[in-house]
Image (cartoon, rainbow over all chains, first blue to last red; front, side):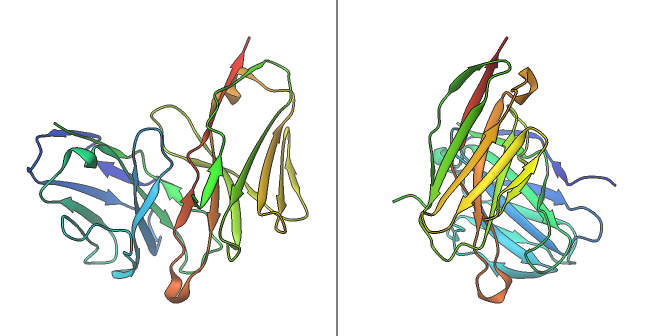
Length: 115
Length: 113
């Protein structure tokens, strides 16, 4: 089965610009996550969706970050405006069910550099 | 105090040796525990789940000590291909279905020929 797809793979922008990332989870996976991984750190959860509803966005910097999953399949994560400290890899992950027992599968990530 | 703490290394280990990693977690309500492996510039991938009874998968053995809030990973007969960053991960299931993973910083392992 195809894995989690993300695009673009790389993005370079200047601070104060806007950027959007796209994720297509594994087919049939109800739960989708966005994580931020800063160099030298482990991934940090930004937001979790179950189908098209937000389950947890407690760590999402809502003044500049937004995410949506309108039809319960694909998702987009947006940063507006970007800051230097947003330079990181943005990982999308998906899981089959809506309970926690299934494995989360990660996409290859989008590497963002903010200049 | 960080939620999941692990020694970042690097651990430089000769091929064939046994190496052990540990991590500690701060939230006693954590319910699931994992080791993930992450290769350079790649996404994390699940290596194994961790249980109190201990579990083994080939050369890899993981152990959980809930009383001490301590998780370990043992790699026997290490191979060059084991070189990677090993991420200690915990999961606390909150109300409403929130179950995002909490990762440590990772331990960098280098197996030397």
